[in-house]
Length: 536
Image (tube, rainbow, N blue to C red; front, side, top):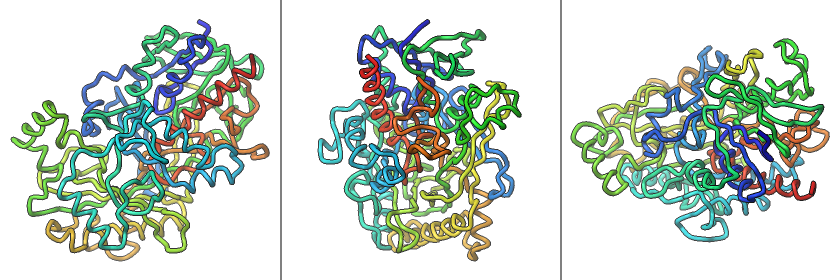
């Protein structure tokens, strides 16, 4: 089959592009997704996050290589493998990052990507229930709403933040990022608003929009220096479809560099060592992986704080289920981290470098999200501006073998210092007068861990990725030899091939990455359509 555009990956970016490019009935668009349709009931229920986190039918379930900064531990790295990609399994927190992030992109030579340049695309994506403003839009497909419930424990934690000097912030995506408050969420009427439901579902009614699920891409096809199609496997058979205009990779920060390397684009010496024919030497592919690093600390609470723990046990769980079914409210309609705080670990910083994510519940391990029976809280001190850089590379020429991922967590002394400061700040929040009525004791790392060495040992043992990988196919200006993409998201040295996802970020933003990835796709759609018009 010959299409105008073939999009590989239906996640936070791919579904957006599928909608925008197929809006012109003249464009025949094929969307390939390695996972299934998004029909699993837990994908729409917000607190179903824990049910999809380790489901290999819906999740790539990646693991890192043994990490030196984590005592040789392998980090668990979930990514969505279903229509909607990671937007179908994430925590639904709507954060754009900081204004400075995008201005820094522009200062790095990525013209057209400053905050003023990208704000219209954030607004274009949104249907924000707060109404239209300088910062927010109401005409977009993505449902962005305020949380329906303010739990007493969440209210107390916000008061704790104000007690230690954090201003209350009613809108982290507005004029300022600093402070503490309730995050807005990608939900509507108690249901998740993934990019599959927001963008792809309405587009699939168009006769020129074609979606192929359970289709794992093996490689991009070339004629000379031009991408002309994709080879993929579906139901045990290999298929080759052609793209008259562009092949667009939207596989995310792990999938896109992996597919480029399988297609012969990457460091030539590395590819040859794997037995992959070199189509184009591009050494930056898979290098420079950036991610936020999180160190989850747990507390036992008292005096019936009504955390997620108690509300999902026994007869209470039955009541919550009825409440959700009849009203779309209650514990099942909550995001993963209702309260967030952005702060600076040092006074001389120009913008927040750390985030506290407050989860009103507790569990034993990252993979096993079974909530404990007794009330608890989990705070996630998170480093937003890490110095550490990792990598993503193919292990072999076999397209069914997952890539080798090195996160390089706590890979620099600066990151280790920031982790200690962020963890101590989390303790400071929990030891306020506002939290005293609920505070029982610290479970992890435990109050006996007081020295820097003891806290660092806890971070190395339990810390990991916050699942916001970026920058493995980063864009950059002419002359940047490690930039994989130009500022129009075209793969350098190849015609008809783009990468549109979080891997294109020059620097990872200082906040959750779903909303910025959607913005990138909205802007990319305009760039692609502009280029098509110029070709005509």
